[in-house]
Amino acid sequence: MIGFYKEHAVGKNFEIIFLSSDSDQESFEEYYKDMPWLTLDFKQQDKQEELSDKFHVSGIPKFILIDGDSGDIISTDARDQIQTKDTKGDNFPWKSEE
Image 1 (cartoon, rainbow, N blue to C red):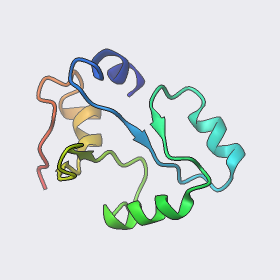
Image 2 (cartoon, rainbow, N blue to C red; image 1 turned 60 degrees about the horizontal axis):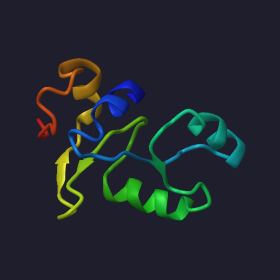
Image 3 (tube, one colour; image 1 turned 120 degrees about the vertical axis):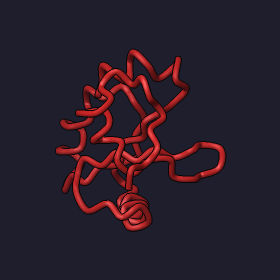
């Protein structure tokens, strides 16, 4: 995912925001340290839980594409797209197949 982000974030005009499900600050910092994208501050776990509920996150990692202007969900299966179906991002932004 890091390679895809570095190669395409600017040209395809997207940003990733990481929301942690780690149990403590130290685990969060260790996991996040090499990620080049934004994150929700670990101390905002209440916001992370609120967003997880809103977007029905039941497993991790979960990649959801959201239109930054409208807030509309574009894709709830972006993880499957980037890992198996469209690894080069030719069809990005992916529309949900659900």
